[in-house]
Image (tube, rainbow, N blue to C red; front, side):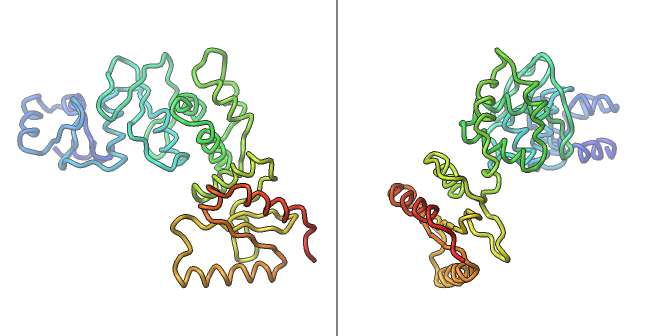
Length: 291
């Protein structure tokens, strides 16, 4: 019993029926534990040990156990497990040998070859292969964001990525397009509004600002350093309380004291008055920087 418990703990909570049988437990014992609530079914032949719920790590480990030896997290799941996606995918994506079929919440592919490496205790496919597989689920700008984050984390090996791409290989065209318009500044954005603003600048041929670059003890949302221009962005629910308004006012006064011009735009302005926003930015960028 202790041996099985320790094995499950090393695997973040789940254990497979074949693992229990391999260490000497009988099928009758396993069935008895299922009836008595020591094991809880998670996938066919894969159980949670001791309690019905599994941690996030345990859920992915259980999926890998079900998929079989040699399997690995892939596509959106591999990118999320690396921290390159902000939201956990609705399904667990796995590449696996053999013939295991997808289950509810689990999408299994069976590529001819599966390269694997370990990340945070679980096997995943190398980044180029994860990007290729994920390109079917990501928009062009979402794929660019993933590339920017990988670049920021210094795990983007362009030579390895280009070597993985090829004619007839699914995802290659989308990745070529994303690489051709690589925008590293996306990785420095802290929220969706900031990313939308950077893309807005790109769309309208405005020089790309530095998101969240440091000026003394401040990190303004957007900075054109040479022009000494700052843009602060007020999201839909932000900067509404008296304390926040006072803090924003103090921050703006300090930046202006340091010689920066400060523009402030709301989410509504960017959405519904883009021409006015463009006109203000272009006017300020065209002015010579102050002393």
